[in-house]
Length: 257
Ligand SMILES: [Zn+2]
Image 1 (cartoon, protein in one colour):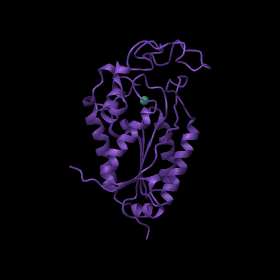
Image 2 (cartoon, protein in one colour):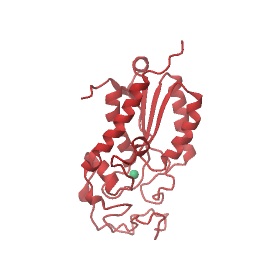
Image 3 (cartoon, protein in one colour):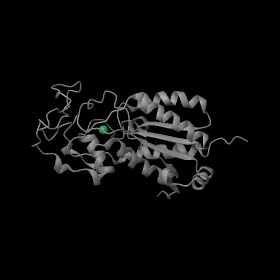
Image 4 (tube, protein in one colour):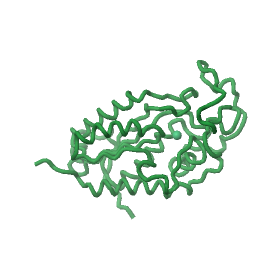
């Protein structure tokens, strides 16, 4: 079993409490993603909440601080920019927030910084920021990526949109916010697109369901109704174990005497 370490939510700490955590466990863990339509059965903040729930399990093992999630993230060409309830930000907006906050965290004394993203193309921003941050701070451990960047796809982690894979992760990580009974027909196609958008008839993602009358609207992948938590729980554990191991091996970093 893993003994629980002391951890706090960054925004809830007073300055002296933060100083004490940095002196003992200079670890900062930051979940990030965006808000976009994730089918009838998943919350619109799914990607970010998924990353946050993984980070919560991780920080119980490592200790440190959990940063408030970055919800205003880059959508890339995620295919859902025109959907109602979606908010994609540009990559330079998300990228500059990530870079500036990480620089400040380093200045404040953090020595292990994890940025876990829950959405597909996000790794492009993270790679760009890593390439900037790593050479400037060789004494800091930066662990950035999506789940599959960290653990690979081998332990059963695959990407889709709101379909069997993401929904299985939902059942494992945020079952309180998933409603499979919501996967039913009957929505009105006339009102489920923003008034400013002409509903698309095709998508670069061949399996993306564009008809709101379908129970599978907004999904890209295999039918979400086949989802099961036990398809993905070993993969989630693998992500957490790899990150925890790297942070533990790194220890508190190199102290400048
Ligand atoms: Zn997603």
